[in-house]
Image: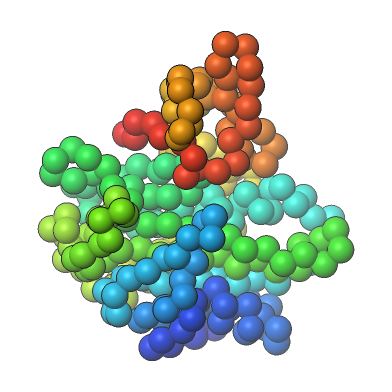
Length: 244
């Protein structure tokens, strides 16, 4: 699917560069050794050291005819986190990885605790009622040793896995392209099967009580229930639940 790969030493963010390149191209892949203004969900920053992590973005311009917007948007989110998880399972088969709703990848350490090893950010540009383009940004902690104490994170290096960043990145690119070629409903079903959140109990941060996860809505958001009251959760960072 993707023919051109653009690699940089330093960028603001690979998503920013992908957006610029899509002004004259249909599809691109952008990588960098360092991004100084990387973005995460909910206006958070994705930070990391130079040449120690994966900073990767896929950009694609869409055909405006007959778009199923909810499937299109959700599909890229699903493809990103699944590609990372599948690539990590190949290079570190003895480590247990888990998806955390909606698209973070966590790894279990020797202490049994799960910590974040990868994040995915999808940014869509609209033209009227159609999606003009989608940029899928992926960050993976490969050999970084130190993290902000407020961030519950890990890396392959901290899990005693040594691998070249370029090797893992190639695995992720291959897996992403495979997944994006699947029918969207099949791709979303794979994501649901890996996420395994339906039927679990979750806590909403800052609130008392436990909610039961009932189902997904048409946009891939989970619907939860407590004492007959239903809510839709559109922010994975607002909830806490057991992984694995």
